[in-house]
Length: 95
Length: 240
Image (cartoon, rainbow over all chains, first blue to last red):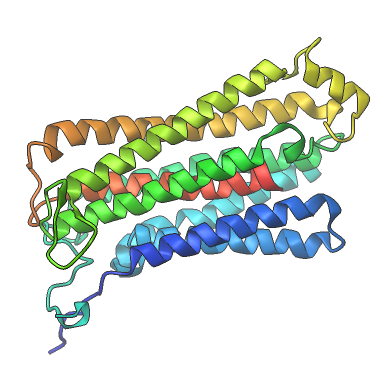
């Protein structure tokens, strides 16, 4: 017999602190953009921070980390569809 | 007792679930709505990418027209509202229906559902207010959904430095900026109105209990999603 998994509530204030620090870092990097020598690196950093922030909110504030897989799928399924939508729209523009 | 030794799963509320799905119908409905909203915002963001990178000229540099520090502050406000929302959720899960209560041995009072939800509403309303002020100032300076208004100070600046202000594609920039941030602002406004409704009809009369706080969980999901969308919009519209 398997015992049901129990989840511990995350430290929400710590996640808030991460989000706060990352927002400041993002804004500071953005101010560097017009004078940046390595523009691509800074853009990649900004996008990485953006993704990390979105993941923190989805996993810990929306509790996706603790949800059942069938519920996670509802949120995950539109993401590749969204990527396909953007890609096809861009390709239509290119063609 | 530490959290780890508690037998109750804190992250799976004890609400009656629908057979098969394992979740109650309100929550399932909200997730399905959020999935459709993902596609809605994707369409907006996708259009923005195509318009921006397929446009005949360079777009205005974000800092040239938009007030990035002010919007950074607004982003901070929305992140604070997200954490207060999740604190409201945790408070009612622990049975704290009160506003503030003194805890022996602690200097700060302990916040309950009434306190944290009120903070969320105030932060959400603050976000919308700052956005309205931003719109009024932008339109006042001459930045409209149709581009730079003729005769405005901004149009003069753009004529003097057409590259920095993206003069040739100002209409595209204006329309996509106001559409994307406007739809997001509309979502925030709907969230604030919904939370106000819950606050006066359910939270103040203490109708939620640790056994049933579905409304708080469902509005919380919506609110965090709105925060998540803003994290994306803030980066692509204001920073890049």
